[in-house]
Length: 343
Image (cartoon, rainbow, N blue to C red; front, side):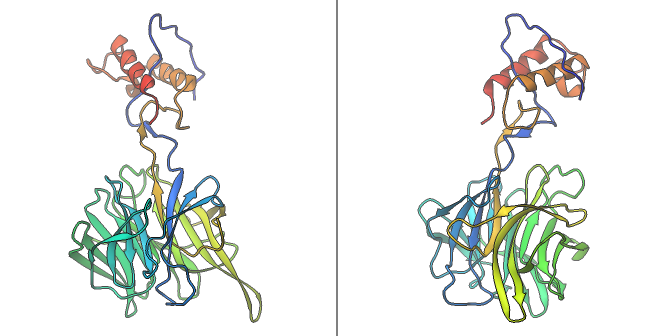
């Protein structure tokens, strides 16, 4: 980056930049997780437990009111364009609106075409379509359903694949097609794989073994793309201590390099005990066009960067008509944004 050039703007208050470099206010800081096992159908599992995870310190989990004591959730997602937290209940294969403040849930409808078991849920980027998955007779099946009614729009089968979580590539990703669905799932040898899918052609574009884990992965996982293109995951499992001795491993938070499937460890998700997190739903910050440095704050460094861009007549600093001309109106437009700060 260039060294900042100071310019005195007599009589003007500082303001900030709009355009392709606009940041989200610090990016995602927290994520919802939900716990529930439809695979074992085992007694004693605390079903429907919902948590709010601090992404900078995953051991910090706020326990929210229970979603349902008699339901087994296999997926959770925030519906784009709304504040709706939606769960996929994988015993009845139904979409349910989760009330994270008061607890409980409201039935949207059953999507059908699926069987109880390890599951996943994601939405299209416009929020109109829900993608849900469970294994069906040796197939990893993904059902496209209307997000408002649960009506089935399409069924996709992948032989000998079991998806345990799904995520949708966000708009504007520099490498991967926006709206493309990705998944995590156990391989036949017990390793965890990252799948890149093309539902239009019903093909697996790529599959890579997840590397960097320090334990054996198990059935429930969570996967979600951040708006800035970062891929997050929670993964739980076990360690074998002796031939007949095993240790359960709580869900761990990672970021994943989508090109290699190598993970970077972010911490252990614990709160009051061991989590078998069945999903991950990031909560994004609101767009902050004045935050040019991307640190979630608006301050002198953002102003200095804007002035660098302005002095260089960079198109990113051309904020007001007549476009193609750099003058007071561009500076004033930036200052207006700067004064608004970050949400």
